[in-house]
Length: 299
Ligand code: RIB
Image (cartoon, rainbow, N blue to C red; front, top):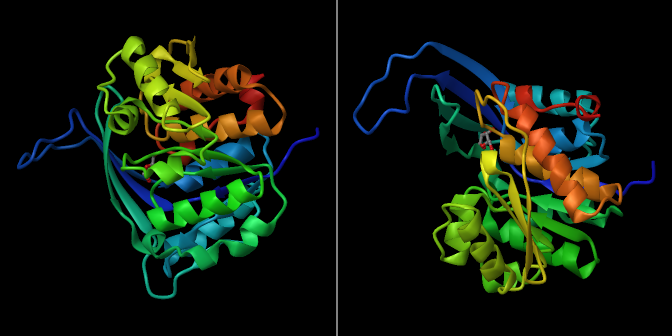
């Protein structure tokens, strides 16, 4: 198949996951049923999703000088990811995420960034010189690095997909260079300044974000599906109904899937349909990378 290369720049974490009846409020202790460790990090999850869904992916990330850092390199290599541009910080530990998943599948996450926070602009140069069609980014690395990568990609005509997670303020100059922005409802509310509660308000927020210069906005609405907005016109893609056990990394699967579909020449509606299907599978499974489906599961 004729497809373009996808460069993912982002974080790698080891996820420490506890399943609990509910997410504790401040000061509360909840006795939990189970604990497991699973590779995660928004960047790594998106790179693994691209690889498992059939894309050709280069992953740029900074790992720590510890046992997790050494394990991650091997894991990414085994997934078929190009790890030529992976970096190891000699002083800092790898990123770690502490995750609580409640009985409805919702989560709360605290990230200790470790080496992810030490990724620098200079670390990206060689990877961004590789001929590629798509750059996929999230916000668990320094904003200056995100802005630099977007600037370089835009100047080379590479399509930029930014998953603005976790939510953060985005500068007008950055927004203008984004081809596809994929906020969830919390992130869309923050970027648009419009509370997003349903598909109607999601459309309003998407239009407001397009007005800031983003070419295409895709607001992910969990079980409701997604809103696509291009040139002021919105459409809705519904998702299949599933019994969710853990929504961790569903957004990452969605973004990896969109990148793969677009790299194969599919149009935006087809790409979002494919992404909704992939994310729907992931929420029926526990964990981040343990939940990411393979292409054959979507045929
Ligand atoms: O998007 C899910 C990811 O967010 C988890 O894997 C965790 O590491 C945090 O980065």
